[in-house]
Length: 596
Image 1 (spheres, rainbow, N blue to C red):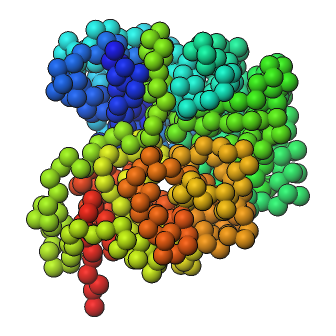
Image 2 (image 1 turned 120 degrees about the horizontal axis):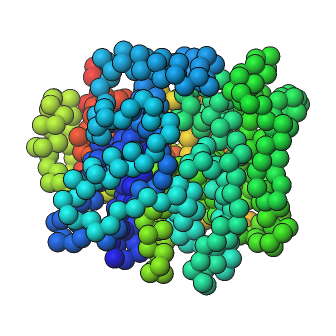
């Protein structure tokens, strides 16, 4: 059985499943280079169809991962066009006035399109203004007819699946859940009118039963609004607010929390509901936060998320006696919340599938379509995207792409041991091989790596390559067998995808400090098992042999504002236009000559 999952949303994506196994998944941003592209994933779908066609197969079912998408944010993709000032105007001046909103957004995007052309693929011109916020069936028909033209008879059936049902199926089947019964929690900004659900997954029966749902869980929306109020881009920079939160002092953030956030939401009957939530939530937060400092606002927002999510899990445990939980949806990307939840005394296991934001809905749709076959298989790894190993990488083609032979050296048959020696010396190295990672995290196939014990590497990466905010931490990849010498993981939680935060052990902290949060000394690790990525494991193991450090600093291979580098052209562009001196490409290393 072959299924195609499609996410037409923020983080547009497509995934292909064969006999219960996800075999490929693509994000549209990797093709069109528009980070967090919102819209129809045309090229991602093409890659899946190309594979099906090449192997003389046929797709049994294709599923779109949301039923009732309104057309307005797709015809006018504000997430891809609006800057911070535009967003502030959008929410403060005319958010509740649809006619004024349409008029202003149309004009704003019309002006911006002169400078930033985005191919939206679908023809929205025939959809009338009166249907922008209501007639979802017109948009469904538009998507379906476009897919039928793309597939050229290769798809037997096309359906639309509830948004949170896709999140829940992803949360249940993507991780390798070992317990017989688990609570499945979805938390996001909104999808099909809902923003929080609770399900019970029975592994023995292979059943997933929805217990309740809520349209009043504003955790993601509040985080989004605070991101904007702190002058960062909503739907993209929420992780920066999370990174800023630890700098707040308890005495101040408690005051902010009590005065602003404490009474907005409540947890009752195992779901998140409004308590004293103001109608105009953004204006309320905008005005109430004006007298407080940025770090304390961030800290109080994080406290809200941790308190509400903690109470939700506590109520579920008390009523249903469930000790195993799995979480997905945009809020699941909050690794500090996940850390806090993992420390609840009754909790035995917490699972957080990789990249729980909307791009994973395509995978959730596949799991849902396959549920009757009872053959859903967990994700072994997340290397599901475009493959550079299939290309013929030769010294000649590489140098031609770099255009200037005089600036570069290419060395062949470079071993992991040789790379480890460079890392021990404090060099920063880009690594690219095999299939790219799907989702937000680079996990060794499109990574920038460094020795986490060497002072100065963070500053160098920030200034010469990534242009990250100074307060933001990096992450580490650490060998699974050694991680408990460095990280407190008393419940032996799986964390292969950098989805949970942990406290570090002070006796070994200096060895990994540059891959931790500089203020609270927490870490967001990829705890790497050999079978997950043998080549990456081998490289780290060679580094461990000569440094006695079983970990490397790891960040994604990309330039600021661009998606993770995908193809060989993307990788070489990043290398050429950054301060990187070393690029490890399969068994070759490219070196920039030092200019005198």
